[in-house]
Every structure is written in structure tokens, then in C-alpha cells.
Length: 62
Image 1 (cartoon, rainbow, N blue to C red):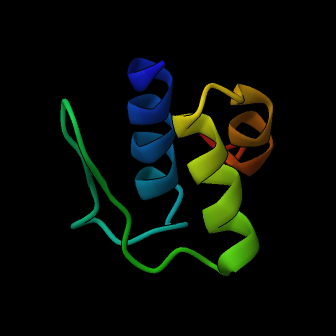
Image 2 (cartoon, rainbow, N blue to C red; image 1 turned 90 degrees about the horizontal axis):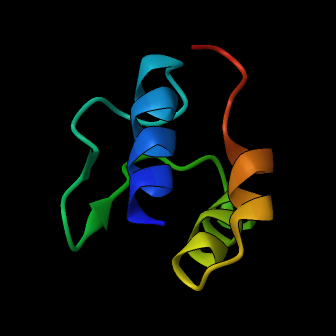
Image 3 (cartoon, rainbow, N blue to C red; image 1 turned 30 degrees about the horizontal axis):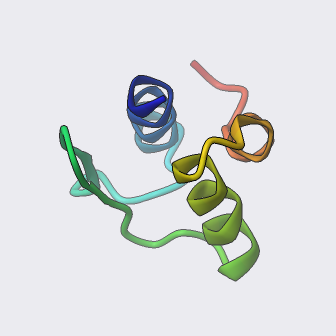
């Protein structure tokens, strides 16, 4: 699951959705400039095993 979150963080950085100083470490995630509380909640849902909101939150740009 953390691999999926890490991949999403990288995609969001590359797409300009979050700042480039955001990071995904082995046991933590730092996301700067998440658009709004709704997006933050979707990303947090992935930490509890619900990857569907994570897939919706990820930008389509590669």
C-alpha cells in the first residue's frame, strides 16, 4: 500500500498538484499545498487501506 501512496505523491509532484518539496518516505508522507481538505481526506483514506479515493485523487498526467 505504501508503494501506491508513494507513486501517487510522485505523480502529484510531477503534475504540479503539490509542491516539489513534498515527499514519501518509508513510514511518513509530507504533502505541501494539497488543494483542499477534501483532497487531503482522500489521500488520508489510502493510509487506512482504501485505495479507491487515492486513485481518484491522483492526477492523470504521468
